Length: 127
Length: 135
Image (spheres, each protein chain N blue to C red):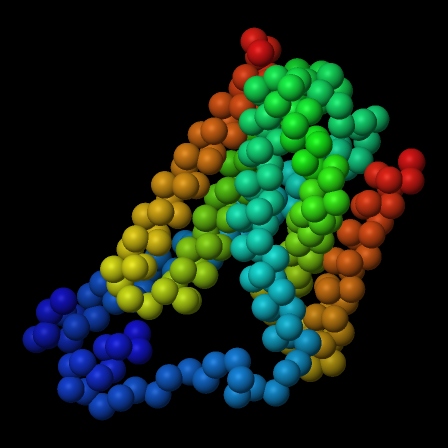
């Protein structure tokens, strides 16, 4: 970090006009979550039981498979944004903050990949 | 940025006061519960979702093991906890949308909405499990 000019002192320390983008994305994904989780909760309530056969049949239909795939992307995206705020609020040391953010991103991308793979497998059979 | 205050020989800047200095109010409680339920959902709720999907993909035996854990007493504690976190976060999230349009900042309506979101979170959780268990 520079120590001469005023721009050198603030560079990398705070808002560089990315805050509004993060805030808006959190709202957009929240709206998506509102729709998708409401659909998911109602679907769970309407299922006759939660046996293996019932759920495999349910996932074999296009709308449930698409819905759960979208749910995974939208909820994990929203969770990533929310946990970023928690890390920024509570982890003050820049090295630890970088490590926490890196871990968060790796876990979220891995989790979404795993979830989407599972849905694809359930939707397209072959188990 | 507490540590930057002292290191560069500059005069210490005032820090924002933390929890213990404020008089407690419903908005504070709701804000904290929003964060707790949100991060709880992110870790436990989404983890559970992936376990459910993963065992479902892995076959009937793996799914039977998941069901056995989920229907045990501690499994039910986790499931009810996750569903409460979901409905609580949903209600306080809708409250955030209302605040975002600039409404609900008057003391009385703010307090009412704050309490209402927490009550509705519990009511929806009870209703959800009542429908599932009593049908």
